Figure (spheres, rainbow, N blue to C red):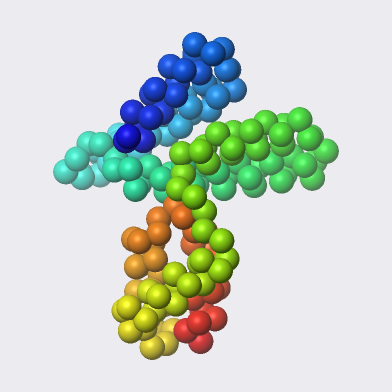
Length: 153
């Protein structure tokens, strides 16, 4: 099922169940998708609808933002607010592909390096682009950069 349809169905279920937290988070997610659609239209893209791969990237950013905010709240002695942020993270992550473990990431990086014939650091951009294309939403690209450098360097 397409992500948009799944979110809409889950919103209906949350409304019926009276789950305010999930409903609120789903509404935030839907609003972010609509913003992305509008931005795509104004940038002149041929389709007004954002593809699922871009939505997954959007959700990954939302998760990262909330995790950072939760950390700030925890450091500031606001555990209730941090818990709310982490609750939202859990809801958003349900719409993301399963995250790969460290060993799986290393194997994927090594496979991409071999597949494109990367020889050194000059090929890092090509490796990262291929990883993003193949494994979008399944790995944290910021952490993957260090792994790629280690294997290419």
